[in-house]
Length: 616
Image 1 (tube, helix red, strand yellow):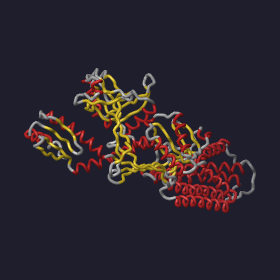
Image 2 (image 1 turned 60 degrees about the horizontal axis):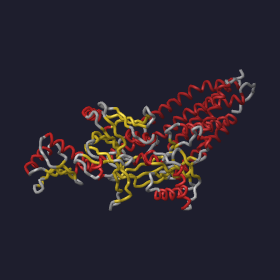
Image 3 (image 1 turned 90 degrees about the vertical axis):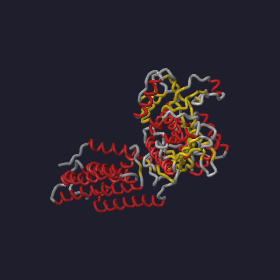
Image 4 (image 1 turned 60 degrees about the vertical axis):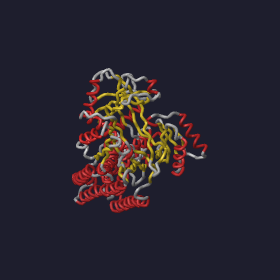
């Protein structure tokens, strides 16, 4: 028996090693600190932006490693983080009045020939590489204004249903005031509204013939907590849309949210998507109003003037037909003429409202209003960011038939803007506007010393295992060490190839455990070969029976561990998932290298020959 091994299995091992090594290669090149400049709302920048950025940095004598125009944005690479931070601050100040987003980034230094085949370094978690840190503040004043606007509309509807006449309903900073004809009507209005709004207190101002409704402290606290918690949920949805692995989104204090994103490659887009407060409002166009009169401010009490992106005035009814909170899904596509559009799906309540309105207003114009809050650059006395609300009519369409839960909006400038708008609507409209009050890159959360010790433990552990196998199993120990290196290359290559996979410090522990399990498989095989030799079999027979008889034991041990790792991944979070991913990959690769890889190496040395002795 010459113990021949099929050529295709050897070629399979070589092919797997080449592919794994190729995709593991980008990890040795590292990353450059960078600053990224992109257009707001998904718009692409042109070469003039590149020249502008270059001139600003040159005038400040700020040296850079490279400046390039990549994927519709300007990317400036630096040699150190100090230059990166200075450049970010300088560009943010100089481009403050421009329609740009300036963000910190870490750009892979991977050669273009590797990038062309999709090879990228594996994503590292916050505990290994750090990432981007955003501190966001929820605008509670805007949340209260939104709540009061809802109550103002509710009062109007409820008093009409009760056939109670009133002069006006207005909201103040903390209350809703109903002006009536006399004190008797005010008392009657309180009798109507108080049972319907038990979370409010109502007082009658007889001198002004006004009913004043204010929220209780318990209700105000509930609103504030709801605004922060719901915004956290929506931010998590947006982070998931960005495809960031193992992010941190948590509350800090009464009205602030911390977002930490490990391994983000496009921080400008992350900054825009997280900080955006975009939503849509659907309103009826007041077509009977003279636009010239509207431009001078003469509009009916129930209408107001908005502007489209060309600066043209549009008179809209104040009543909002439908808000972004009823949108359940949104996707971008192109219409029959190739123009960008966003396809909207509504929940059942929103679908009912849209159907009822459109059925009764066929032939009339309906406008789509894009609303978002932006940092005004000003601060309150206590340091809070003051946000300005920007509204823009992006679409006017004639209602030709009753609309249902699904429809589309057009009038969008670019496909990138349509994709961004769809993402924001799909993730959900923020309950209250938020502003980014602090942005920085963060170092490893567990400390560089711990990381160095973890890496050193892995390397020293591997060295000790390799030395033991080399001394104890001699030439076969060398084969096992070669398989261990193959295993490490394959794990790193797979971690780099799998989207969303993130290497964390517990992940390194998973690799260390994998190394031990890979050696365990080789020990079972080699001891079985020794046993076959002691029973008097020839070296070739011993090799053949050793691998064949040890296979079931190795499979049983590894499959049970793999099941445990899958359960950990299914029910675990954060670091536990990182450990489970590397452990699962390591189990699969260690079985491959121990059973097929070492067998291929052994047969390259001993297969097809007549030998008298094995070095084992």
